[in-house]
Length: 216
Length: 216
DNA sequence: CAATAAAATTACAGTAGCTGCACACATGCG
DNA sequence: CGCATGTGTGCAGCTACTGTAATTTTATTG
Image (cartoon, rainbow over all chains, first blue to last red; front, side, top):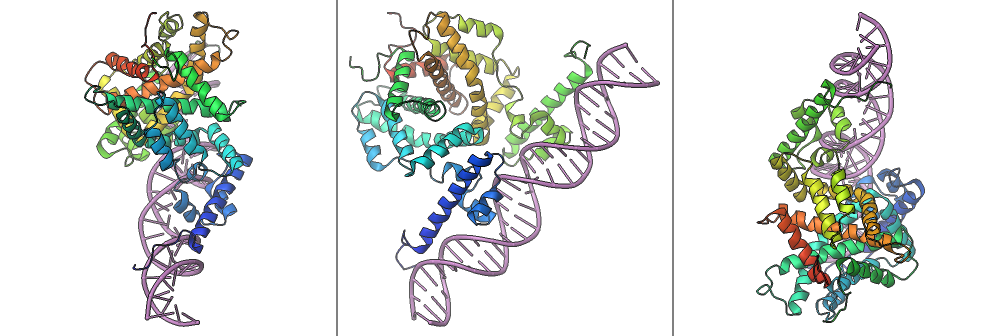
């Protein structure tokens, strides 16, 4: 109890990380081969050389191993950049922030893409993923509120500022879902940032906005 | 097979309907009393005087009895009114259409409100509900596309018209989620249509639109 | 290195949601 | 009444998931 806190690179931590990725990859491979529904937790455990109980100690649910253990949380730097961003396009900046967090988490792009395609085509997983994102909404709303404050907006002059922040987050969710589907299901020939610009352009066209970045 | 289709008001149909609502109400009452997680299917079956097997024949899943059997589908009249609507506010009209379908399905308003509050506070149910709505998205997109065509828009001049329709549906989903949460969790002091107007006003403010219904 | 504390893994038993199947029963219809 | 069809039920079984207690593995300390 008096010793220094456990190192991140001890044998223990390395073994843990190894087991986790081993299970994640085994699960992904099995699902791509047999389909999500046909894959049982026991199959994954056998392929990953752990007991079923250990599996659940790691991921909690069957879906967990496919979604990854950690929710996509942005870096502090990105967070600060967002709050103090001076652009007029809050929605676009927020979408960018979320995207960066999502992509920056998985170093292996092939694995990322396989995983995303599996999620996109599996209702169970997609539903769970949306739930996870919804759990982030509260903190995102807080974040948007901070930015609004930083830009001089206040509850005194705008009583429903909290609602506005909440709606920004909700709209960002829509844009994300649309873009994800476009990117991983339909195939979008272009870069991610082009796709996001396209999506945000659509929003502007629909709501009759002059377009993001308009200056009165 | 040559006889006329089974009457809607035969003994059989009436018994079926009775059993269904009996189970739905029993489930709702149990969940409000003990909490969703503590209620087991067996408890609902005992209260509803049916076997577990029959329960699953009716609802398929535990969640099903709480969400209601049929997804909220608008009436043909409302559908036609939407497609040929001439207002400039597609988003608002679509949100109104969905709301009407949702409210018009449950005659008993107390039951509706209890159910919605339970759904809203139960992640499992909320997630499932979102999945159900997502299943309607394809047909809604088609509907929006029809309206766009009726207003003279065509793929020839706007290649990404399908994307635009898809985004309209996605945005409507955001507005619905926001409004539902506001209505059933926070308490909104006002009529539903006021709430929807408020929500749509927020969207306009965020995207920099001159506002829905603007006439140049 | 040996002893000991802490953490990880495991087996085992049990619960709950859900399904296929076969059989009994009720209803609608001639 | 007699038959076809729809409906309810019991049962066996599968899968996801959890609590518990025992066992093994890693880390630390004397």
